[in-house]
Amino acid sequence: MRTSKIRPALTAAALALTTLTGVASTAWAAPEPGRYAAAVYCDAKGGLAAGTLTRADIMARGKAWVSANVSYSQEACHGDAAGRQYRTDCSGFVAMAWGLSSSPDTASFYGSSSRWSDIGWSDLQPGDAAVRRNATKGHIVLFVSWTSSAHTAINTYEEYDTGIGTIAKTRTLSSMKEAGFKPIRYTGIKQDSAPPVRYVQLTSMDDLDGDGGRELLTVHTGDAGGRLWRYPYRVAAAGFGTRLDLGTNWDTMTELANLGRTASNPYPDLVAVERATGQLWLYPGRSQGFGTRRLIGNGGWSAMSNLTSMGDLDGDGYPEMLAVDATGTLWQYHGSAAGFDTRTSLGTNWDSMNSLTNLGDLNGDGTTDLGAVETATGKLWLYPGRRMNGFGTRVLIGNGGWTNMREIEGAGDLDQDGHPDLLAIDPTGILWLYPGSGTGGFGTRRQIGGGWNS
View 1 (cartoon, helix red, strand yellow):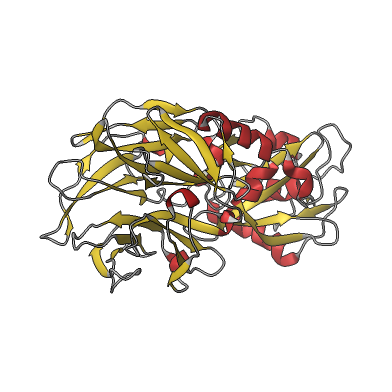
View 2 (spheres, rainbow, N blue to C red):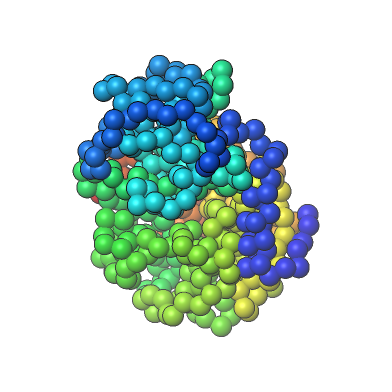
């Protein structure tokens, strides 16, 4: 293991810059012509007016080229069903799907325009795109869907390369960030219906209201600005009590994590990353909610994922936090009075895992364990804690199917039976409690809520 003596704010920022320089080691599709390079003119006949195409329409237009496997060429045109012609390279393909009046290049798509705008990775919806540009080279893909609720990989449609043509492809989010892609949205999309309403970023918290029970925080995306709700668990009722409103504008934050209590604060603290700046903020716990936030990490934290608080792993009195960088390295950030000071590498290839969560002392050996879902298999694994030595040999605690869960969160001893539990929301919006068995796994799950997808 390797320990860095750099403050995490600077480390994450430097990491974000470092990973973006590793593009040469990754094989990407053929580059677009430069902004001023001569390219074939394709007559799109004025395109389609903004507000004409729904997301479903855009996906159908993209799929038509994929089904036809339209050949890749920067010097050829191909039409849509109405005969509008578009250049048969990656940006011409996206221009066709969006019904634009011309075939821009990737330099144009990467730049500013009233026709498209930058969005966050977590905001991607079918029909959006992701574009990269490096000097005179670039590539753009049409977003189809996330491969799972973990949001670690995406399905795309794209005009890929000579001899390959228009294809459906899967790309990991970490590799796209490393290569310098950014997500964008066509501003002329006609909404199929109201945006999906759902509860996201489930975050289990210690007792905030002093009743001895645990709490659950979640952001409701259907509320204007993203409202943060607190659900107190009631053991006698075997479910949650009346929820409490903790404020709006939480859709501007991501990677919420319970940092736990410190010697100076009897209430648990919350950390979160600001989407627009990549800054890491601490929200000090107070009775019933949180106090004024303070900055504990400068820009660069948007390059990190799966922020997971693990309690005081190293026994110094301050809680630790885990995070995975764009290269798949898992880092342990060591807590301090100011936030975090050093970090330690705990291994690579963690981009093959998702839904990292604190399982508490699930196996009963006295240390905090980590849970994670293997993206390729959907299996749930337990990584037994080893304090200063990271984690021991992983143990399988759940067979395939966990990638179908939309949210997974270690819940602590929610039912107060002496064993840590797990919460998960399935695709139908049912909230399930998996009670800890006391033998390193979980007992029979039981439903404790419904409607969590509405």
